[in-house]
Image 1: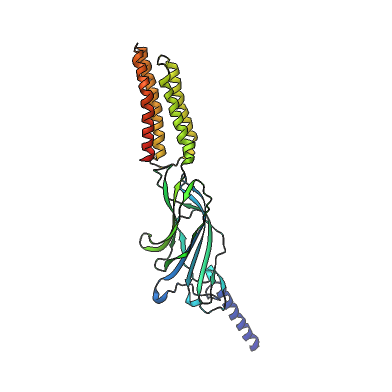
Image 2 (image 1 turned 120 degrees about the horizontal axis):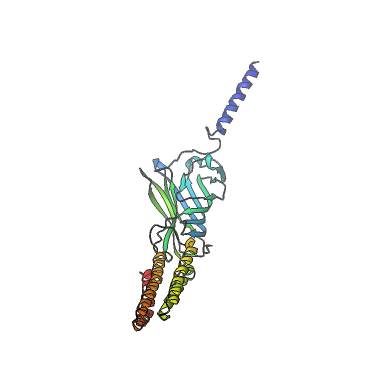
Length: 334
């Protein structure tokens, strides 16, 4: 009887220990879940970064689609000498830095959430991310704008870690998928991030990029210029033919309105004027002034001043194109 009772007690204790370990209350075969730096100092975390690809940078939605990989490594003395060879643990089985990607919109993780532990206690975490990130873009120079884009990481626990860049592990692919931007060489920047009541360590992979404006040159800028010069045809029509002048001028105005409506999806929705907005406004003003000139020259001709009306047209043949070209250069080069 006593032997059966003792066996039951032993079985009960074994079951309790097993359940407690499974619930995470006791570490079974892992290290401490608390950060342990030397003499209470923050844990030194080495950071590597691989920019695999940039697939798209969208100025309208101010988003970027990227494919990248992050490498983190640190020393955990509580794991040193525990296993004779490299060991793979789940993320929840030992301590690791709690980092967050600040401008994450819809990033997906492409690797298992595990860490690799070396016999000397060196822990390595690698993760690959793919998806959309938010970017802050000042588009006043659109479509000839240049920006510095970043993928920003911060520690969710201020004072717990210290990030250090691994210079030999900061890599950027040479061939990127994005075609409408010229992307420069990036770098990993260690920084302190203000989160309101405190500052926390973080790091950002930053890279410069300039928009390839040739697409907008052929799709918007050059067609708009053609419509403007089409409206200047009123200066070559005899002012006695008011119907023909008004037909050309009003046709140009309707054409530019329809063109801008069809191209509106390409323009960023921002509360300030871009270079393209100023050029568009200039084009509309020049077409409207050509319409006004047609009305004035026709009135002069209608009041018997045909010679003055023709001189007015001849002067505008030179004045309007010169003014339009000069102001266009100022818009894009200033």
